[in-house]
Length: 220
Image (tube, rainbow, N blue to C red; front, side, top):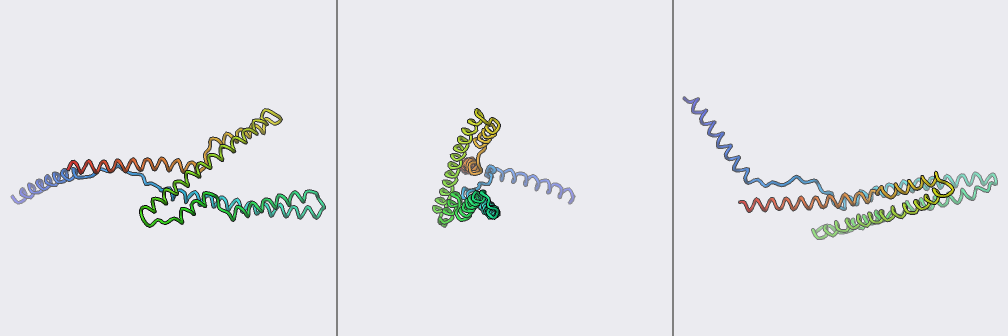
């Protein structure tokens, strides 16, 4: 008898638990899954660090090459060769370019430094800082696009002239290089385009979440 009573008690408890779970599900707020949003300042920081690394490596190559050409010029001058002046000129030019690249940051790096100097204590200040970072990304992408178009145009014109003139092989190579420069976007352009897409998706997901919360509250 006691065993039968315990079986009935467990069955009733199980049914009550199912009913409570069903009622609790009506109070849940369904929020769609959101992809983590990377702010403009973080993206600008990554681009600035990459630009700094490339600038430093380029400066080291220029300084090393300049020292090498200067050494060759000194070696040739011992033999009274006329090529020593050419080596000195190349070495000096590369040294100057290397030192310049090493000392002066690029525009993208400077813009990130300007953003870092901005205060971000209050919500308004953080918003202004993020807006400045977004503007820096936009300007960097526009500069990169303009430089890519100009470079592709100049190289394409030169390649076409050689293709139709005295050197078809060199001309075809230059035309191919111009086409590559025209169609392949820079990292700055890609990052800014990805930022715009992610920002739009994030805003849409936030609006969807807000609508879900409001609808649930109205249903109550």
